[in-house]
Amino acid sequence: MKIASFVAAPALLGLCVASSLHRHGHERFHNERRDVLLARNHSPSSATTNTTCGCTTIWSTYYGEPTLVQPAEQNITGTQTATATQTLTHPNTSAPPPVHQVPTQPSKPVVHVEALPPKAPKPAPPAQKPAPLAVQPKKPASKPTSSHVASPIKSSGSQWSMTYSPYTSSGGCKPSSDVASDIALIAGKGFSSIRLYSTDCSGLSSVGTAALSHNVNIILGVYISNSGISAARPQIEEIVSWANNNGHWKGVEMVVIGNEAVFNHFCSAEELAAFVSEAKSAFSAAGYSGPVTTTETIEVLTEHKETLCPVCDVAAANIHPFFNGKVTASQAGEFVASQLTLLESVCPGKGAYNLETGWPSKGSANGAAVPGPWEQSVAVEGIKNAAGGKSAFFSFVNDEWKDEGEWGVERSWGCSQLF
Image 1 (tube, rainbow, N blue to C red):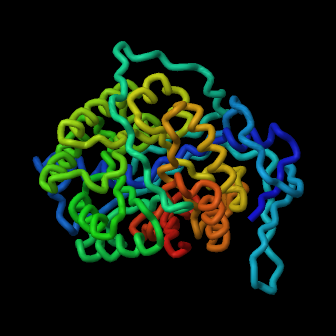
Image 2 (cartoon, rainbow, N blue to C red):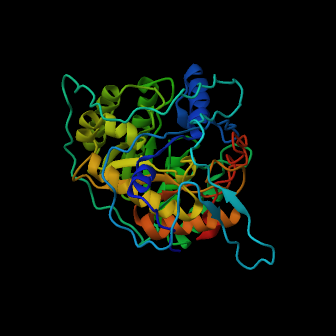
Image 3 (cartoon, rainbow, N blue to C red):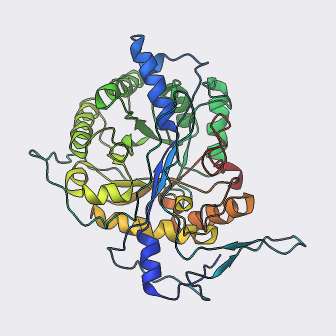
């Protein structure tokens, strides 16, 4: 689908730089699960299969001033202005399509918090648009460096990866037989990789075994919660133990340390960099030589690039066009592609990957971003065509165990049916 062009270059530049700041719903789940397990002197892998997942997802929309150059010229026709009326055409219907008004100025950034007990305090939105991220952070006293040589990332054309969590609709842990069926379905749809966020629900063994049998790679995750890095270290040990028991690291395509941990103030950039280096040393000693990285918002990586880029084998970010209030479903693909280009410039020579992206099928509009089944189909198809070979689509199925959230979209990101 071709996308309406922008009348003025500044509008395009602002659109590309205005990246989403998304706090994923696994944050609450892992925080509560790990705190309870640690209190009982158990590791996260000892959770029973009936553990209930109560996740908190926090999104904020960032409208920064443009600071970088316009991305490569797009093949664009038509015209569009900041005050234009956006019309989404629904195929095969007799009724006129809905018309969504695009505001001339987006509302103040909204921070989204799911109200799951115990209820976390909701941060207040900033009084005005944040200043451009032009100030470089101080370098750490002893800057760690990357010693890994990243293995080539395998991609199935426009379908690289799908995010997956081994949870039931009520938030418990799925049995291994259900996990095996899910992985078989993902593989059958043409994905070459699956992204896990943590090691809970016996995901290493159940997902690992199923993925290996279907020749699907795994992106492993080490989740850093608000308990900090010390609480995340047991996951490193679990991964090393799992690899030693298997006798190999076959199928592990990448390991991601943390998920927006600096953005969420769970640790500092210097602490994260040191932990990434620590994990890499442990994995290397156990025989792993593939890429290790972290994932943050592009703004955080830009601000702390001198600290984080040297320890990351690849540059990675979560890029969600819906949480930018000025991006329509039909513009989602172009937005993600432009953000990947920006990400490549943050850590030159590292390569760039989008580790979480998609569009909700239900809920209320976030400015120009309108959820719905048709809009989800349009957005996902656009992302697939523009950047699918470097993107992890979120998520496999709807997360019915979550709260509906600020825009009523929290449960509605399942998109495997579109592939």
